[in-house]
Length: 225
Image 1 (cartoon, helix red, strand yellow):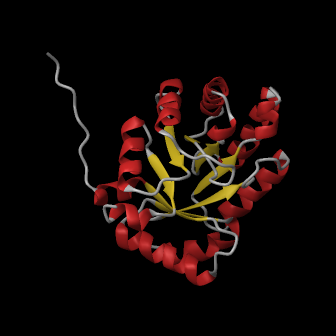
Image 2 (cartoon, rainbow, N blue to C red; image 1 turned 60 degrees about the vertical axis):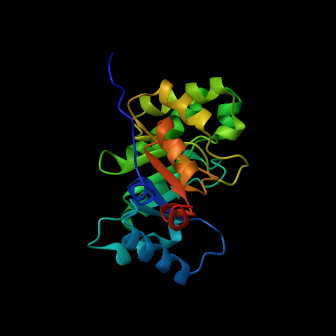
């Protein structure tokens, strides 16, 4: 009988999966600086901040292994595609290494898949192959069929990750959604985001297929809570 490999890890091991996140509208400079310091201290993969703070994070994290991630079209995804493309270009010029773009949820729910694809391509063209790209789909607002279709479209347009949620539209990452997306697109990244607050949350999402976690409870999680 074939043995099945069992993934075993401890809370500190989860750090390498985490985008240490601070997207609150009232985030201050000192809070962002602390975010960067914690990311280095605990070995998080990246920090994820609003575009205004990208240049600060790039300076703070220069010479470290921690990546700088920012959001585009956040949090609604309802910007024009050219606006998202310009926003991504500015972020990259300021030092962003990863771009998390919110897809056009309204177009998606309207069944206008051509508009959704054009939106994705506009940002992917700016990012090229050197910037890691993640597309946020707001799973809480979608049917399972829509989740599958948009995940496959995200792969088709060359994005590196499907990301579950902004954290601003209700709901959040679930094991069901991560497993569903993993079956739909078995060979690209999945970033589970929204409502991840404990080590058990993180572990279960990773076991379901997540390859990155977006959370503001990062320190709490890697401390074993």
